[in-house]
Every structure is written in C-alpha cells, then in structure tokens.
Image 1 (cartoon, helix red, strand yellow):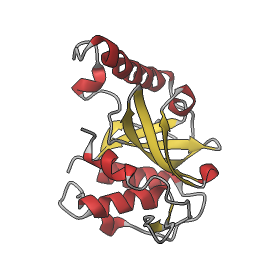
Image 2 (cartoon, rainbow, N blue to C red; image 1 turned 90 degrees about the horizontal axis):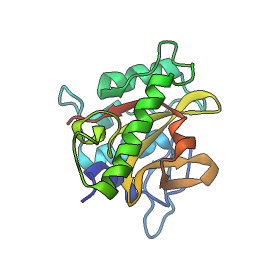
Image 3 (tube, rainbow, N blue to C red; image 1 turned 60 degrees about the vertical axis):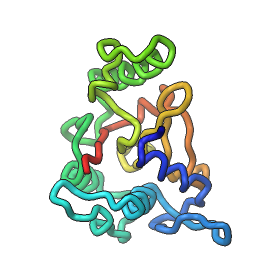
Image 4 (cartoon, rainbow, N blue to C red; image 1 turned 30 degrees about the horizontal axis):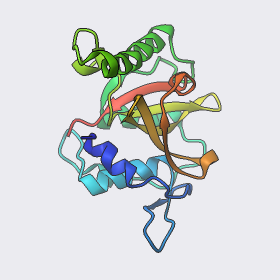
Length: 191
C-alpha cells in the first residue's frame, strides 16, 4: 500500500503545469498546478498539519516569482517539516559528497531490499535514515535549489512525483542518478 501522500499525489498525475496554479485536473478540466501548488493541493486533500497543528494549506502564498528566494523557501520548509537531509550552509552550493553518498546508499538499499528481503540492518531507509516515500525533496534546477517533488516508491526503487515544467504536467518517474544529483535537501511531514 503506498504512503498516503504518494497515493494522493498520483491522483494529480496528468494535471497540466501552470505557474502558481492550484487546480487539480478533473474529467471536464485540465487543471493547472506548479510544484508548490501540488504540495498545497495534497495538504488540503489530506488535511495535513504543521507541528503546531495548523493546517499546512493556510501557509500557501501564490505570489512568488518563477525564480523563488531560495533561502526563504528552505527556511519555510525547515520550519514546517522535519529535515531528513539538511542543505549545506550557503544553500546555493552543490550537494556535498557525504550527502550524495547517503542518498545513493538509501536509494540502493531500497532497491536491494526488493531483491534480498527487508533486512533493516541492510536497509537504512527502513530505519528512518535517508529518504522515504512521502518525503519532499528540494531539487536544483538550472543550478539553483528551486523545485519541489514528492518521493514515491515504484516497482524497482524510488521515484519522484512533481509538476515539471518541461513535461508541462505532473509526472512520476524513477529517481535515478541524474535526479539524485539534483537533491539539495529532503523533508518529512510528521503530522
């Protein structure tokens, strides 16, 4: 059974990309959403809450530019969610080798668990280390951390669900090495 956030996010797949959009596709409308709008829509549907009990959807602000203020975005994510993988100081820098290693180990361990059984000692993702389905990742696009995605679990490992402008829609695909390199930070909703 998929994580509730992942299951909900999959219901948004195919919704067209629209900057600052907040509308899920229906049978009669193509909808429109961007990466933050996808998270806001999921938070509304699942009534997700911040650590203080406030509904996450009330924190929505649809007045941001195409290139967000990265430090403000990271600070807000860190305030609302548990940090799984912290960003480096000076957030504009590339991911550190240690963080990349942690990501590769978590991703590889999940893949290995599919073929060798779910041994918690072999699989750090099962003990809470690394990224898990339902986590939110902050991704570098054009060299700057500015894009959000939801980690999913697919048949052969981890995936990403996100409103991706080049695809012009909400999509799901494997979290391969190319995308792993783009992860700047990861967060977990604890409510």
